Length: 434
Ligand SMILES: Cc1cc2nc3c(=O)[nH]c(=O)nc-3n(C[C@H](O)[C@H](O)[C@H](O)COP(=O)(O)O)c2cc1C
Image 1: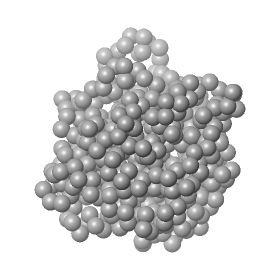
Image 2: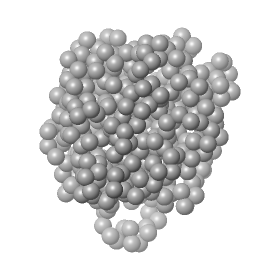
Image 3: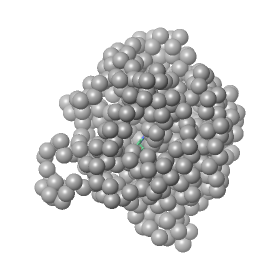
Image 4: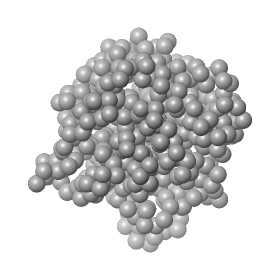
């Protein structure tokens, strides 16, 4: 029986996606201190492009080296773009093999920029992020001039993406980074044209799309990743997300990806039992948490308000889960992240009938049955598991960048240890170069 996930789909801009699965954006964190693309990105995306995936979304490529999500991010700006034009072209060349779409995710980290990179990050307002054990500086509220300059930076990076052979772009407005911060009333407390009403909070998004469209043309896919909600009291909520989706549709978006949460409420990876800010956490229903694709019901409500194509990411693991979501027509594309760190070819295997279930990174990482069987109330264990899972993914990404296959036997603690060491080195390299 033919699978919907293996059927093609045409975007409003006219581009055809060969199938309905997208590799979700996962920050690679492999650039050296100079933040340039290199052979590692090419090795990594070659593997994913061999895996019969419709769209490969890159990890967040930053528009400003002073406001990055991590020290080893790729940055494309007007100063450095010439220094890696060949590597970007080679990256797009391998990433578009076999009729695969390769889209660049473009981002600015705002107040979620690590303090080691910038002790005074740019953000809508001076609302500081406080996470135990991590340092985030007191943000400097952006002037209107700076806002306009950042809009131009997003558009510039999109232009370079197109010129170097990437076949689409996605603007990152989820997970608490800059564009998402502008939407959140508890983080954006401005009282000028860029704060207050929802129209004002979404102004930057609409400007970026309008200017980007004028720059890259009508036939180039433009996507955005949007929070269904921040899941924080006083934050960007579900009703507002639906209203923003309507504005984005009107602006001519080709694909809206639905996710949710921030560093304070990390629901994006389904970590519902962890909250950095528990007093202000908005909990999702247990039935939603238990659901395979935990943002699908939020997407359903957005679907009722718009007709543009939707993509849902987070938790898809089974063939039936993916097929049912597509069959329901709530979303036209499903995003898959962590399983592709365990096996870059798992989507191909599923489409070829070899797999019913994608590799579950979370399960692989059990610290030991005693922890889960005891339903331990010890939050630390849940935190270690969640961060361990992320570290494990980063380690597999690094292996693939070295042209190796993932090591599914790697232990959580080993991954955490290696990742912490790599992170330290990355900060050092960044500081030496800047
Ligand atoms: C290692 C790692 C890095 C990530 N980096 C990004 C990123 O750069 N941009 C983004 O929008 N989401 C990022 N995410 C979130 C994923 O895109 C996705 O929303 C999340 O992993 C849930 O999907 P999954 O259950 O299929 O993994 C990252 C997730 C992981 C595990």
